[in-house]
Image (cartoon, rainbow, N blue to C red; front, side, top):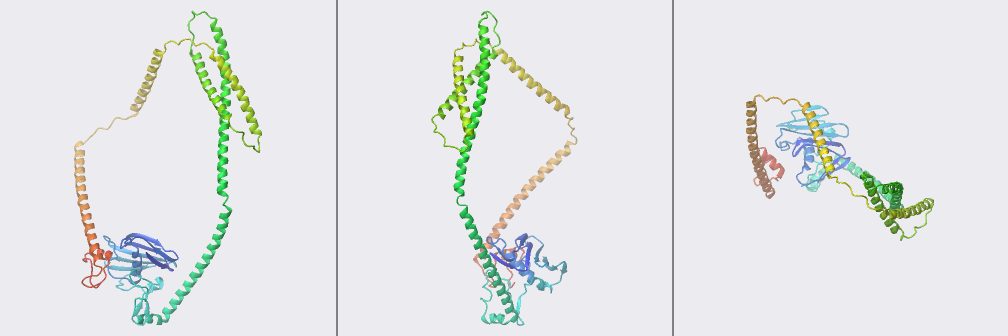
Length: 454
C-alpha cells in the first residue's frame, strides 16, 4: 500500500516508467491511498515524484524495451511539469518551457511550483520531509539525536511543523463535524425505518389481494367462455332443428335415391361431439363449485349479485342443453360414407405438383437474374502465389515456435534471478540492499544485475 498526500498535486501520468506503459491517476484532495498486490507498480508513483523533484541519475526507471520515459505532474493551481529521460539525456518542461543540459540539477523554479524540496538545517545537512519509503523508519526516529535536534532547532522547519499541526487540527475538526452530521442523519434514517416497519405486512396483504383479484379475473374469463359456449350451443340447437326437419323430409324419400352429400352431416356430428365435451366440462365445473363455502361479504355486491344471476340463468340453459343432447342421442346413425381414399390421394398429388411448380418458377427467376461467371485467366500466377503463401505460413509458424521457446527460457532465467535476490537480500560484494525488480531491470539493460556503489 502506498499513501500520497496531495494538497498541491492533481494528476500524475507515467509513460514507459518502470512497469507502467501508460498510467494516469487523479489524486483526491488531501490523501490518496494506492492498494494492490506486490510488484504491481504502486511504489513507482512515489519513485516518480522523487525523481521529478531530485532528477535522480541512472536509467533504471526506463521501461524494458523502450527508449524514453516521462513523468508528468499537474498541480491544482494550473502548472504542468514534465520530466523526460531519453537514452542518457534528461530534460524538463515547465508550463511549455523546455530546460536542457541540467546534468544532476533541476530548474530553479521547479521547487517553487512543486514544493517537494528537501529542508536544509545548517550548511550541509538536509531533511526529506516529503517522502517516506516502505522499508525506512518513521521520519527522524531512525536518525541520531543530534541530527533530530538540528532539525527542530531550525526556525523555518519548526514553522512548517506548526503549519502541519494546524492543518491536522483543522482536518480533525472537520472530521468531527462530519461525524456529527452523519450521526444526525443516522437518527433521521432510523426514524424513517421505524415508520416503514408496517411495509412488509402491507406487502403480504397486497399479495393476498392480488391473488384474490387474479382468481376473480379467472372466474370472469370462465364466465365469458360459458357465454360464448351458450351462444355456440344456441346456434347448434337451431342447426339441429333445421337438420331434424331435413332428416324427417329425407325419411319420406324412397330408398333407391342416390346418396346426397354427407359433408354437412359429418360437420353436424363433429359439432355435436364438441358440444357433448363442453357439456361434460360445464357439469364438472358446476359440481366443483357447489361444495364451496359462501364468500365473505363484500362492500360492493351489485356486480357479484348480477354475476350470480347470470350464472343461475346459464345453469338453467345448461340443463335445457343437456335435455336437448339426450334427445339428439336418440337419432339414428348416419348412412355410411363412400370411399374417399382415391380422392385424397389425388388432392395430395395436386398439392405436391403445385409446390414443385412454385419451386421451379422461383429457381428460373433466380437463374435469369444471375450473370455468367467470369472466365479464369493466368492460373499459373495464382498457383505460384498460393505456393509462396504456404511457404510463408510455414516459416511464420516456425518463427512462432522459436519465439515461444525464447520467451519460456527468458521467464525461467528471470524467475531464477528473482529467487536468488530473495535468498540474498544484500550484495555479497558491497553489502548494499538488493531490490528484486531493480536488480532484474539492471540485469536486462546489461549491468549484470547490480552496479556496486550506485
